[in-house]
Amino acid sequence: MWRLFYSVWMCAAVTTATAQLLPDTVRNPWLPTGIRVGTDLIALGKTFAQQPLTGWEINADVDFKTRYYLVLDYGQWGREETLSNGRYEGSGRYWRAGIDVNFLLKDPDRNMFFIGFRVGRAGFDEALTSDFAYEGFEPISVTQANANLRAGWGELTTGLRVKVVGGFWMGYTARFKFAPGVRGNEVFDAYDIPGYGRADRSTYWGFNYQVFWRVPFGKR
Image (cartoon, rainbow, N blue to C red; front, side):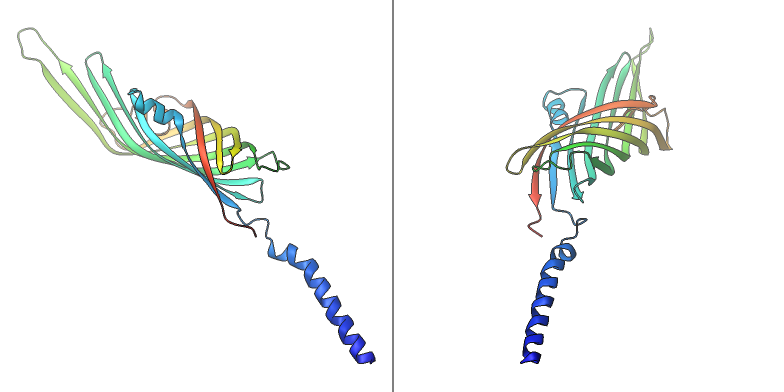
């Protein structure tokens, strides 16, 4: 009888201890709970309005331990401008990667106010066409091209992400871009860097207004 009582008591103790340990051991707070994928409405608006700057951008982030978010952006950027004596055309693609730190940790909807950092990289081509007209001669056009240029820069970011309904989110990102650098065979000074802006500016401000759809990874 004593042995039977001892066996039952040990089984109950082991079961209770296991039940207490499972929530802490199975649920890893560093495991992501979902991914948000979205796009920048400002870039699309400029494209539909046929502005000199056209393009699109896709944004995604994944959460780790509620506070930290791994962020990745990918986009296409093109610019066409009419000059006093010619025309400029440039286009290319870019990506940004970095981390956002969320400061709204106790919000049940997982809304975000964040500060972050990005590293940006771009590859692009440019062409500059200059028109010359001299009295007594036929007008001529000369085209110069920068091909396969590479650029890089850094960004400090801040912004909001707000849950609207279900998996639909909206938000904005403000960017302070700095330290641009261009590499490659520059026939003329690079003018416009996709994802950054004017290459002759050492700092640049950017702003994105974004919509997202969040896909949860399921209950852990």
